[in-house]
Image 1 (cartoon, one colour):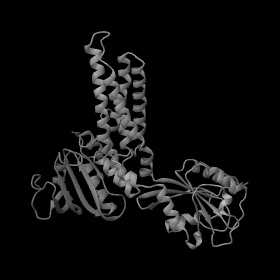
Image 2 (cartoon, rainbow, N blue to C red):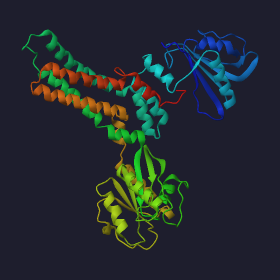
Image 3 (tube, helix red, strand yellow):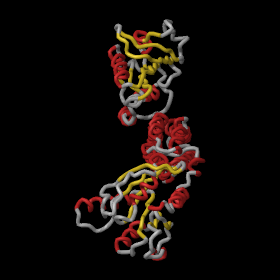
Image 4 (cartoon, rainbow, N blue to C red):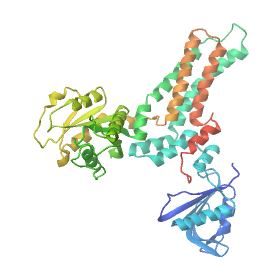
Length: 454
């Protein structure tokens, strides 16, 4: 166990009903005994009071800090596997900061970002993929993202990676036996080794294939609203969000920078970017906005292209159609309440086309239905493990490349000890996902993304 006793505020900063100050470490119980005065007058008994809430006050040097509820949790059956104390005080920034400063004065160190979860990892309660799932739960923007994060916290990635490493280990053990315990020219037959390597590679490929779905789960569907100025992009954003988030006027070029909002459609989360109207312009600021719109379009998972059906198609409309060709896009023919100036067939596209009057809230249900059909989450929910973490995806790719090199080398009769180098490196890459093989630098990078109190 780590010797330092740490403390931090574990609830969001600001005013609220209750705030929690958390301690973890060997001195947690000794420190709380110095400052907590139970209302019933009975001193804290670390055996009987384990996991029980005690009511009383924080008092030190005759100064009353707050009326609190205190919970003691004995190691090793705690979040960090250490002695943990949680002080539930009133949600005043004055109260919570005074209590935290008191703990620091009495010997606690201020917790670093993610240090409570880092200790859970270092003390063997969870692996690194489970630790990363904690922050995914905190940051989840949709129901399916939260469910998958909980699945990974329960060990789905850990189990999948451990299974692949066991398969690789079978191949490694045979290679090492051949290197160390056979005479020159008497290497073991390679058929079994090839079979294990191929099996491991198939499992990695299967996991890698879920990464695109995982990105959608974790970050939402990157969605771009595009079109000429004044076709209704900002109006559509406001209508989908059911609030006036974007400025809507009759003046062309009002939106000059992308506005990003999140929208939940059932289990699906859309990350919607309302972009500047795409048109030829001499305004330098608007021109930058148009260029940024095209950049967003290129990296989007979904494009919603809006056209004004009450105006004739022109060259700018044709440019937009060319930009979305062969992309995952939906076409909205807005202002259907006005006289139509072109036909659907004039667009010459196989993309889904929806007629709508955003001003009159007509066609919104159709837009949402088509999006839900394109990104069907049913298949995702039925998969046991989905790779949602970019770090995991990159390590799987590295491990896969090395396995393929192994297969190629062993089939080309490259010396077996050369094959072992790539295979062991692949094994270690997978170990970085779970934390079995990981540097302090990687750990620091992972946990600095956490808030201080987690």
